Length: 136
Image 1 (cartoon, rainbow, N blue to C red):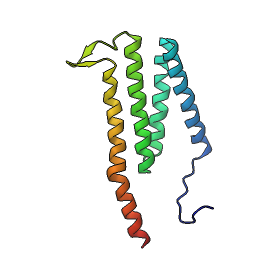
Image 2: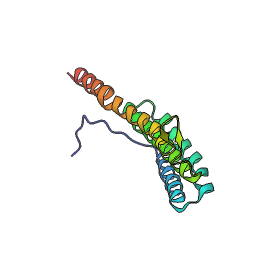
Image 3: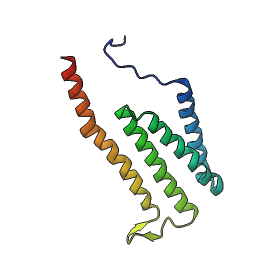
């Protein structure tokens, strides 16, 4: 049985369809990477990332959703960087003094992780504290 004080998060059907289409784009991108289909893989970065950014924008008023959706967008950037570096045979080349092409993808991975760490270590505790004080 649902708690009557529990907040319900509802997604309009058109947005849910867009999120599902986003998954299709992402799978096509990664499948293309796996199969070595360079043109399709690189082309799929654009719709995959654009939909991720749109979803982030649409959920910008809900801190938890925004943090997770931004982390996904940065994950796609990291994943795409790694894929491109492999496609152009630069994944083992040294950039920025010591990072390989593949390791450059760690930059967006880290940014996404920092966003989630900020949410879970700072924002979420604030939300919980605020919720406790407003319900008393």
